[in-house]
Image (cartoon, rainbow, N blue to C red; front, side, top):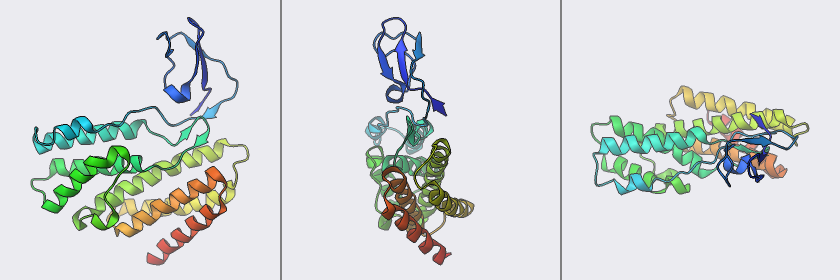
Length: 244
């Protein structure tokens, strides 16, 4: 959506940026009587949201596994629901925390429904729970074969979400740098996302990670006008097509 970010409180006169707070309520006096005061509108899809899994981690040894999985899933879904990748007209990167939250939400749902977990699966779940809120995921080599579909689908969904915001950002820019080249690459990314989602994520982890890396390369190209990013994105995607 497009918003005017600068706001002013009619009661106390304070000014602040909606892009920083994500709220129209005055941060100084709490008054809801505020107005937008800038003329320019900017695309804004992100919201201020805290992602702290400490309360869930503290309950690891205290509550049944099913309850732990539900609490984990719900916390991750709430975070993902409020996140976006354009803040006040600025395109953001596809960050590790978002990708980890996507994966942990899907994995927690598997754990919730599972009657038993292997030691390898339980370790992976707890390791992801340990670091997801600071953007840490276990390396691709440590993904159990039984969970590669979870990782693949989560990665494809994260890429889909980022692609959607990139497309909106390009469409909202009068002269987005390299938009024609980016649109071509976005189309290829979309094709791979559809393929992985059609397979419910069950592809080699290396493939889903390559798609993620290509998407990040494209984001770097658009944010910093880095031609190496575009070339790298194309190279990674070409490698994926060779594997199809």
